[in-house]
Image 1 (cartoon, rainbow, N blue to C red):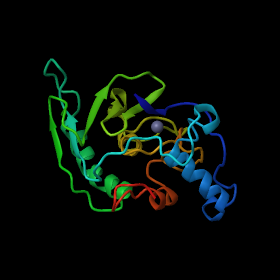
Image 2 (image 1 turned 180 degrees about the vertical axis):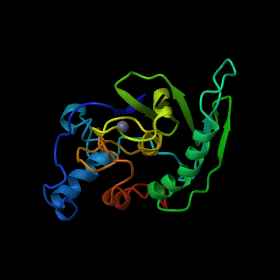
Image 3 (image 1 turned 45 degrees about the vertical axis):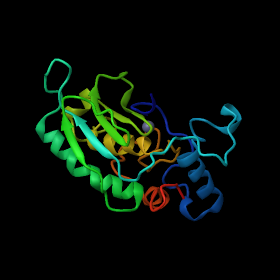
Image 4 (image 1 turned 90 degrees about the vertical axis):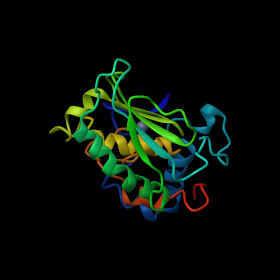
Length: 213
Ligand SMILES: [Zn+2]
């Protein structure tokens, strides 16, 4: 498992007010290398990966099915119907941002995790208390169970509201990594950030050929 969203810590790098990074070529490259090649969490000098090669496994389709796991092994319900509906409503929009095309997968739910290829399971579990969620690229999203009871950030901008966590982790599941800028949802500590930034929307968009650009 990798790609967890941190609950606490400090931002590194740029903050809002440090200029306009979107229009500075070296910062666009820096941002892109973090988002696509994982240079924030895994710099090339540490992991020894050439930057030209994308580290993530990316799904063979831009339209995977999603399966929301609603019950645990004992048959007990682990997510309210209200939250299932909120997640169902958000997935097509989030996927349209990530892929740049209308969502064409299915959204299923049920007691058992799906084992089919090209299906992203959405699960709920008690994770490490420092995490709001986790993702397995191409396979699964796990949302911290305690996040389900609160839908907003707290007064200090902290917390794990489930829909922003869902968006962040689905982007990991689709092969994107952390960035170090404040104001981006894929920031490793996206306090107060509940949606993708304009530069994330611009740089994600896996469609039409399934490769990032
Ligand atoms: Zn993350």
